[in-house]
Structures are given as C-alpha cells and as structure tokens.
Image (cartoon, rainbow, N blue to C red; front, top):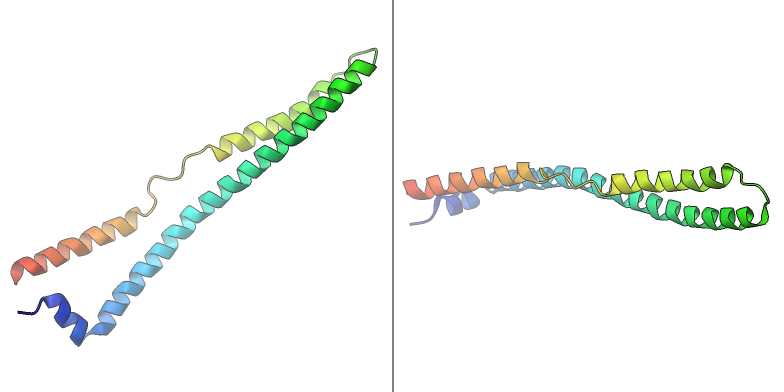
Length: 124
C-alpha cells in the first residue's frame, strides 16, 4: 500500500510546493527578526570597543595634561568619562540575550505537520 503522502506528492505536487513555500516564508520572517537582533548587538559591540579606545586615549592625554598643569581642572575627568559612559551603555546593549522565542512559530508548524502525518499514518 502506498503511503498517503506519496499519493499527494504524485497527484497534487502544487500543494506540496505551496507548503514548502510557506515554510520558506516563515523561516525568512523569523530569521530576519533574529538577524536584526544580531546586527544590533554587533553594532553595540563596535560602539563599545571604539568608545573604550577613545576613553583610553583621552585618559592618557588627561593624565599627561594633569601632570604638566599646576592646577587640577574638572574637564580632565569629564571628557574621558563621557567616552566611558558611552562604552558602558554599548556594553549593556551588547550583552542583552537573543530572544528565546526565535523560530518558535516554525517549531510549532513542524510539530503540527508531524502530528498530522502521524494521524494520517495511523488511519491507513
């Protein structure tokens, strides 16, 4: 006896192609949402690293200026501090976890299809 799936594949291949196209569309949608999060994290890491580099440079300049000046000026702390604050914000954005619900709709659809296949197999 031929499994019902094979008879559908032979008699109505357009239904199978529509189903596969639906899976592809669903995967593309979910991958784009996860891809946006990954891109946002990559930009946040780049901002963090660049800000830390700027902080180190400005802190070194502030130390050299502080050593040569007779008086202390508050801008020697504030200017490198701004770069450090930007690095901290970038680090907090970069460390956010990826959404756990990534590809859940695709998983639910695969489970529903597997249950439908089991039900069809049990009937035949």
